[in-house]
Length: 428
Image (tube, rainbow, N blue to C red; front, side, top):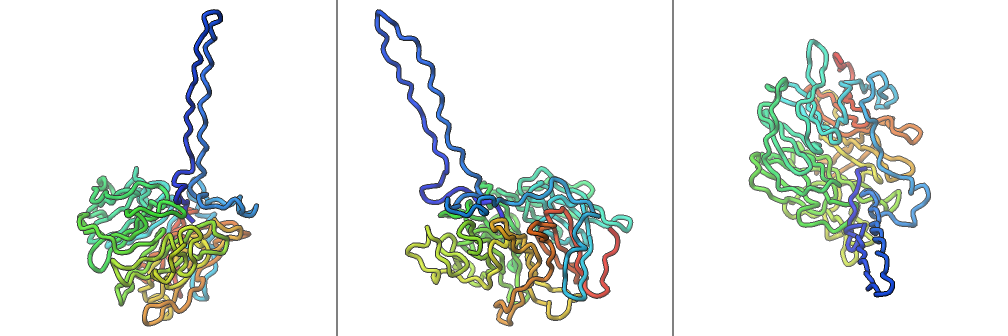
């Protein structure tokens, strides 16, 4: 999962600075004192990395070696990708859609068939286009800052960077010479930990995004740990939910039009708790999902949970596993897959780093009851973990017009296509 910031009550900053006062003694007439050598400046303790915040000194030896998993520095070559090792239900197949999409994260589809892909770490936005019967990957925006969240609306590409939201109008008509994005909203914190955003367009024609907690575990400010919405011109900002730690996946129920989202729970309580969550926003402006007081709907935080009850907060719809790092999610609204998949939620579980035995690293499917509650959660595509090492890490999913499913893999810098039956991919 993602790195966490250093905070928490009296530990808002892990380092302290000490100053030394130089003391000058008066010289005597008979024997002038030699000038004292300047005292060396005290070295401030080096703060630990943000992802270590909240780690107990009593963790096991195995856990002391845990750290976030960095992807390779360059995209994996097409012939080295793990597609042959991935496992799917009978009748499904997975194939390469595009390689060389450096740090491929959020997937979005344009009206003219362009697939847009964000890059959180490499600060680019890519476009995958068909050219002469083959797919071409081109960078259409660069020099951005953590541009994880992207969404299209009426031909306009909206980009959520760490501290601002911008747009490029008529983007599919300008792929060969795209202009620089125009900023529409910048009233955002600049914290790096959990600062990357996810964007979606609501049925009310507003942009929705989250502002994560700037920490592993802390008491967030009024500007953090929330979901906001704004108009397409950046006006009318509102907070519609609080008590969220970090979200990197949202989608709207195709019938009820309620917002569903994945959420990462805190690290370092244990390898098995708390579990990450699938939530539903049923009461905009009122729902509070519990951070930092309560995790996974029923586990009070040992520091911040005193005097609070988990029953005060909105319960999750489902638990998605310990440190599974669920990212992108989509309701399956296509017609290619069997009927039992229609209306289910496909979730990219990026995979754990805060466990000695990795968990997640797959595409899970959450099947729903008629009232929108969750009936079951089970793996759909597995094989991204081998011998406790990542062969790939799913980051997002996208339902295409033909009903196939795209899956981004930010570890390998690739996008895969999942089809059922005879629906095959054309070109490379």
